Image 1 (cartoon, rainbow, N blue to C red):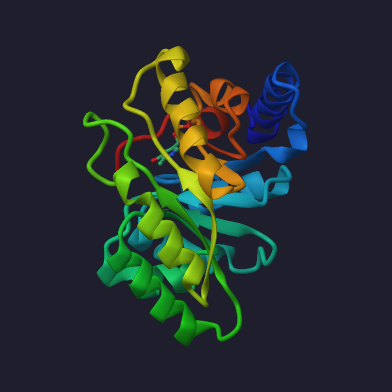
Image 2: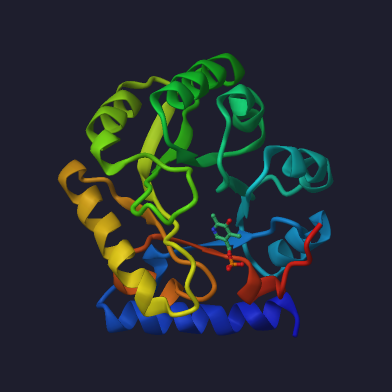
Length: 226
Ligand SMILES: *Cc1c(COP(=O)(O)O)cnc(C)c1O
């Protein structure tokens, strides 16, 4: 099946999940996760109509970026953990950093963006860690007030919302409580965006309020280990 065919199927699933929960399907942004796949996959997805892409590693995207630099209206999201010593390179390569999880990283990105693009804010999200089983990246929910305050005070960063990745399970219902929790955590700060849901659980995520779903396998097929 081509990316175009898979995309048509995903779009109809997005629509149905949105309808079930009384939401406008257009309030859900599909981020195509292209980690491990080549720049050609990004181009194929772009030609099928996608404009938002997710990559996990700064270095991996650094090598693909020159091959897709002509796709000027594409937006690239960093969805993998970011070490603060790579903040500058990440700010140069990506339009959205979804994985801010510390004050230190927030400060590094603020400085980097200030020196790269004066007067243009970099979009960011806070990655939240909701359970001990999750990968070690992500801020503790107790750190949110301080992180939200710092990011909102940043001149060069624009805080969109929260991102999370539940412990892996092939049963989407296992993810649902994490999605609900992320929604609850965003509410007191009136954060408008929630990045949650992947190939196997994006419908549950939409039902729980996701505005960004990050989909790789369902669009491109299984990733081969590099
Ligand atoms: C790989 C990855 C995805 C996409 O996962 P699929 O199961 O292939 O859809 C989404 N989010 C993050 C953070 C990822 O690392």
